[in-house]
Image (cartoon, rainbow, N blue to C red; front, side, top):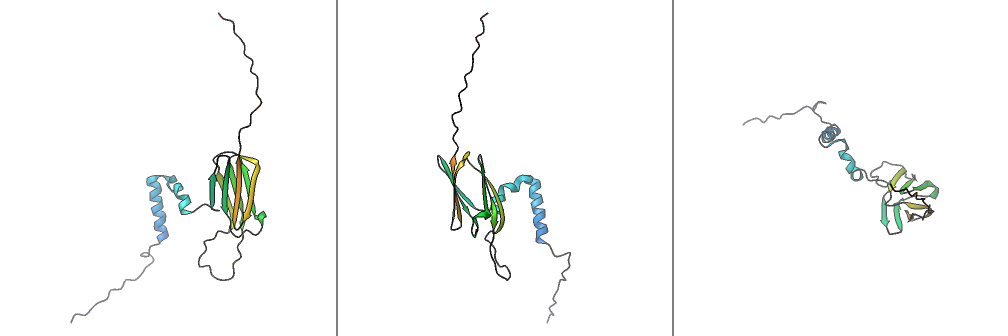
Length: 160
């Protein structure tokens, strides 16, 4: 009978690969091959913008639904509009109990989101309501107002 020999490998620090180091090297290779801005196109996929927003455009208005669960005080939300930019920031405070976090998917803490709008909106006509975790914003289109007409004097030149 043949005697079976068992080979055992001793783990050394040199043999153990750190997967995060490999990922960093992989990312650097991709940056080198595709350019440093390659990953910018994946920002919304890898790290979705928060808070989540659905925006709908009509002829005269934009309606935005902003997902903000757990807001207890409306003063924790700050909304600004400048021309064709909407800025939403605030703080979501979730009360959690003692224990180890197993899964954490609901956003909480400070947030700041800037959204480009498809057209300029009126600053004096914005409707905002908050109910059941949704902030609803109705932004009304800014139409160009007729400016005062200015008369232009025409000087006639003499013919030669």
